[in-house]
Length: 460
Ligand code: ARG
Image (cartoon, rainbow, N blue to C red; front, side):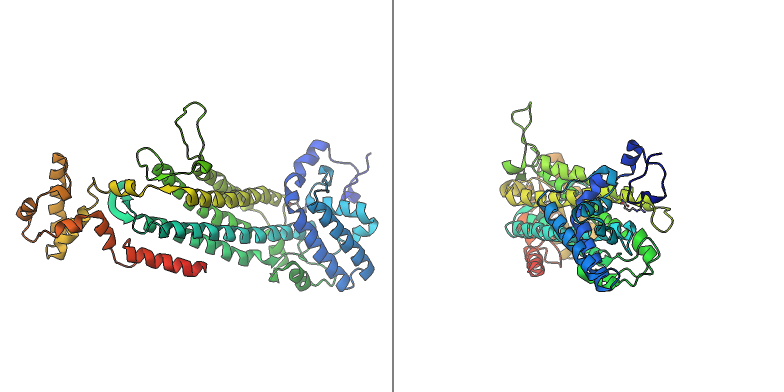
């Protein structure tokens, strides 16, 4: 009979086989939380000393040992061992190596269940502020680009067909608005992450006179969880993060899809900088928008992480279950994926060239001014439905002849309707079509400027 040397080994007569042990271990990935684990332990032991649950001297010794570990961790001097299963038991073992058996007092009135939840709240809280900072930078880059392109005319699309001319700045500001709401969602996510699970213990609280407000304060949480079962068993703060991240990825992926189109030979609306493009190993002429494609592609893993955790959580009875160990990798992966993707998108937008002439010229040989003509007739008293029909027939005729609305002679226009005058050509001009759209939130230059001003005020 081999003795079991685990920190929980007391009631065991035999040990796990190595491969079984490895299956149960999380140290290969939860070591990302090492710093938070140590900081949480420092808060916990400070509280144990302050409340007299352990002596002041013991608390000081343990705290000093944890501070040494933190220093060593930051210097890259700590190594973790799979036989210690997870980050919590690794740190406790390292602490024991550092200060001896007094380390065993650290786990008084605490469980790994509240400890792991605490670590994850600390990790995510830090990530949430990193994400909103990065989003702020992305939003600034978009505003700057929009400002340079208020009067850049491009085709606006519906069904990927030329619909009406718009300002490129307006198009960009649509994404600004999406990323602003994304940022707000992450900020709201802080509310549910800024709670301390520590002191919930395994599930039911503890008979020791702990001070959960003190540990919450020491760790910078706004307040402790109110219910101990909830504190150790829910992961909704992570689900919220994964779902916010998924929505953000949708926005980034749509933007990237457009950038990919825009730099194709067919569009040539933008040229990506060499620093954000790659070549082909066989076709010498290629310049590929790999980074945009990768952001689009990486949306898959982020959605996958959301679906993964939703599925893990479904049907879990209260309180802790080992299934919950599966909550971490998706969260880490998502946090790492979105933080770099935001930076890449900002870098790509900030360094690309906008081919303004090309954008404009693609609105000159099309029928995207057809609505202008219908509106023109309607503004002169023709019922809009009638106007729509007249213009529709004219478009059909023109396309048969291979000409556009601006090529139709005034004579022919006047045969069509006596309300048409020479000013029709001004109305048909794409630049004017954009400029005249003064309706609130429309693509008119004044409206785009208004959006930009509002954005600047938001960004401060
Ligand atoms: N490594 C575990 C996890 O990530 C820590 C909590 C373990 N608790 C337990 N009762 N086995 O969930």
